[in-house]
Image (cartoon, rainbow, N blue to C red; front, top):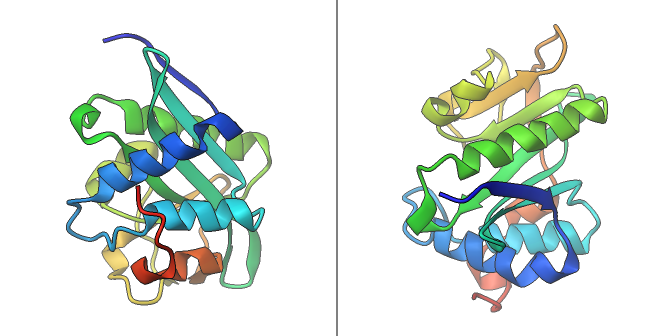
Length: 175
């Protein structure tokens, strides 16, 4: 496999990012197929704080987004998501490379840590774990994960950007 190159999103990546997220989540059992809309809404509102694209052979094949979140009453946290890789290339380390690169960027910015909603089997490899008292409305506790960059684990409810409330009918630009 050619080398994976990761770079910050550029305007020329926007359409490919949308296509990646549509295809990556099309058959995902817990998706509402709104990930591309979430990224678009974060971008248009200036809330897409870290947006990284994975290139393979010069073509965009994966994407990860990070946006600011409040945890309890604490700012300085980021929410990871969505992360998507073209279905034909999943399981080859592209998503892991994107997540690792994004977490390094957050550390370099002095973030308190990162939270997410996802599969603990995948995210444990990065140091994410469930934390007692950390919640995300409507999500089982075992899927609410946290990676503090310091010694203090957060508690309270995670409040993400309004983009995460988007529903499929909110936009007809499906790729």
